[in-house]
Image (cartoon, rainbow, N blue to C red; front, side):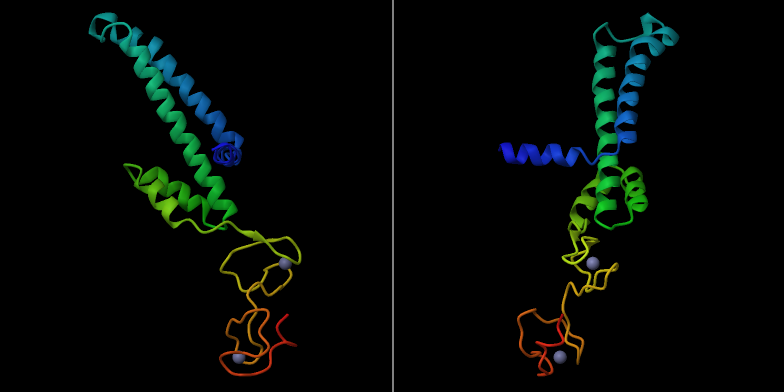
Length: 166
Ligand SMILES: [Zn+2]
Ligand SMILES: [Zn+2]
């Protein structure tokens, strides 16, 4: 339980500061709108009884802030996973009823892992490190098909691979 909680807090930390500031501002604007602006312009007689408007302000403000934080999370998370951050951020904003967010969490790529040779982040489907050329998925030098690091010969073409698979 505590581990899940600290993982959640760690995930929250990737939200860019700009998005967090925007969430705070959105919450504040909601409070001003529902407590000051709307009562001033609409007039007290056309409004629901006293505690309703501040309550709408708080609930609406929290909803808006959570939406901004979640969108900021999608932006940072898609970026660190080597996905198109701008495209996914636009998609989760544009697609209604949270379907964009659901699609994102279903379709997001696994986290990039550091290259064992140079620490550059590489995707799970990369065959080679884009920075140093390290073979993340070793392949047979003869037929080019993926093989395991401890194979002595290629299971597809039968050539000895111990010397070539580096
Ligand atoms: Zn590398
Ligand atoms: Zn082969």
